Image (cartoon, rainbow over all chains, first blue to last red; front, side, top):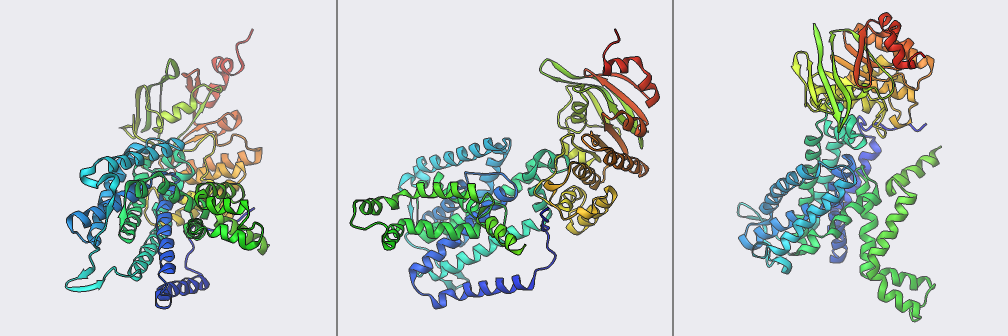
Amino acid sequence: MKIFRNMHNSGFSPLSVISAAAILSLLLAFPLFVKTPYILHMMILFFLSIIMGESWNILGGYTGQYSVGHAAYFGVGAYTTMMLMQFKQIPPWFGMWAGMVMVVVVALMIGSICFRLRGPYFVLASIAVAEIIRLSAMNLKDITNGAEGILATEIMPLKIGGLVVTDFLTKVPFYYIGLAFTLITILANYLVQHSKLGYYFQAIREDQDAAHSLGINLTVYKNIALAISAVLTSLAGSFYAIYVGFIDPPTVLGLDTSVQIVLICIIGGIGTIMGPVIGSLVLVPLSEALRTNMIAHGIFMTGLVSEQSAAGTFLKENLGHAHALIYGILVVVVILFMPDGVLGFIKKLTQKKMR
Amino acid sequence: MAILEIINVSKFFGGLAANSDVSFTMDEGMIMGLIGPNGAGKTTLFNCITGYYPPSRGDILFKGRKMNGLQPDKVCKLGMARTWQKVRPLAKLSVIDNVMVGALCRTGSLALARDIAHEMLAVVGLTQKDNFIAGGLTIGERKKLEVARVLATKPSMLLLDEVMGGLNPAESEDIIQLILNIKKQGLTQMVIEHDMKAIMRISDRIVVINSGKKLMEGNPEEVVTNPAVIEAYLGPEN
């Protein structure tokens, strides 16, 4: 029988501390050595993806409430920060907090409605509510600019007193903000996992009725999980808005965003701290490769298909647009062969080797 | 002193009366056996008492306090804990973590909860399995885990729903000893059980339920010799 490692590991192994410290210092020093904007951009996308995945993980992974409407929180965070910055000249550093407060309000409203439902019905309700918010943003033109979206014309530098800590002229400040937010969300997951909350969330995931009979107030704890998850997602939304500098309802509030968030976790491994990191390692390069048609070029390089042939032309023209199809295939493969995600698959392989 | 008073409790599902006008009281520290044929309404009564269904009519008083309509988590906090006929382990968590979830009902400290959990696992005899994942236990071990988990919530009253169902004689004997030990600690227990020999041994009093109604109440000897009870179980004599 498989021996389960306790959720609680008292102390860390020296190896894991050293490797974590090494990775962290590498990441901190990274922009000192790599100045290529494109690579920094990829790293920032990678951070953003981890933040989104880790945020969802608290609600979907630990508590087992599969929200496919997290774009609502992402979008509300993004819109609040952006609207305050663009229309009221409030720097994003303050707008971000306003975004979080807004998101908690929205999340508790959504939670009090949707948590009456269980399982697939909760999933459907979460999609519906996110769509309502997207349509509202689309149609409340006076407040949100509607379908035109909002373009950031100028991002105020971060000042403490009179001192400018950073401006946002290069990608480097974004890199460090992304890294900091990533660490915050990972830390949040760690703290949840090693507290009463984590035990209660997982009890709710495993069996709601049993959890209820053990003194767990389901409504309260589900809403706590949702609030934590939504606040962190809004952090990702604010970061995205400031980094990209343009938001409109389909990109930040659309179903695509919600699905993307869930995929990061499903592919990496649900309910684990490293899962969303692994998921991002798979998905970010994949979506970039699709966008730049790198996959088609890769196929030509293997010599299987010639670039000039009819098949080659077809691939070149269409593979980039087929991202939904390729994502779909990827999900099917993961669900069929790695039900615990890539992380679970790796763990299983290493366990087999050790025997 | 009566710790639990069931007063004319009825539960209707549409036109079906799963319980009608059931009344009895339980004294502190006693073991009450609840028996009756399949579908008699024993588990429904459990669900009414522990807050899963509000009773359609009647009152449930626990330590003199009216319980009707209280949610299960409040019921647990007040000191009444139940196990499930179909065991409900938190399958992906380890055995110790399962029990800790129960213990966290009374404390916010994980360290304290872990101590309580170890203590309860020792009580039911699952100490050896504390790091196993709950989904991998045998049925007998799962039933013990259920008991350890509810004990960890520090209840003053336990409701055990067929904790011996599906167990072999040796395992049943373990559970009987466990129930008797729990009694020695002063806990009140209500036990649903089909194993007549077991229920005769452990119960101070027995309530017989048939077709949702209370058929009779008495001590074990009275119950097994009562013709109405025999008829309910075996059918009428021709």
